[in-house]
Amino acid sequence: MRGKLIVCDGSNGAGKSTVLEHIKDHLNSKNIEFISTREPGGTEVGEKIREILLDKSYSNMCSTTELMLFAAARAQHIHEKILPALEKGIHVISDRFESATVSFQQYGRGLPSQIVDQLNDLALGDFRPDMTIVLDLDPVVGLERVRSRGEGLDRMEEVDIEFLERARQGYLEQAKSYPERFTVIDATQSLENVVEEALATIDKQI
Image 1: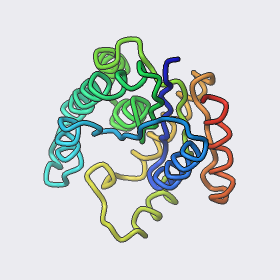
Image 2: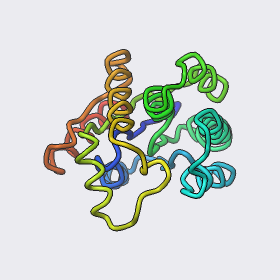
Image 3: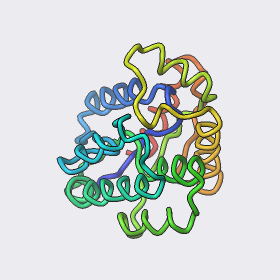
């Protein structure tokens, strides 16, 4: 049986990392074989691209370059890591995927949807995740959470609130357009409730 790709995505500061840890613990408790990965990254090439994308010293990077770097990392990711695992029946849990590019580069940066779709299609063909869990949160609250960690902001986080609000709307619009592939979870709930909803979504898919 082919494995499934489940993505955890959404607003910055919404708790993706914590929810992903609970998902991994849940799958391990059920002895379900899976691998976890992230975007940008997941491969040696992808991690190098990630360093460039998040490096604040490249503040002058244009939006088209940013989009193409994300697509390049994704192409390597899908061919080197994700598809081989799925074909072996191994599930893949990813921290962000193509939905983030639609949200941040199309809705956030304002790049034309045709270009974003073309590059996602170039990287993925007709492949898309089986399910994307979107953790939805007001970007003001999310940014406060990120800052409270005391780790500093990376290049993709050092943006204005309007950009993050547009990106948030991008996730919600995708979920509205593809309800069979997206589940939106209100990240203002207690962590317990957020995790419960995420695990229920996982159990329906795997």
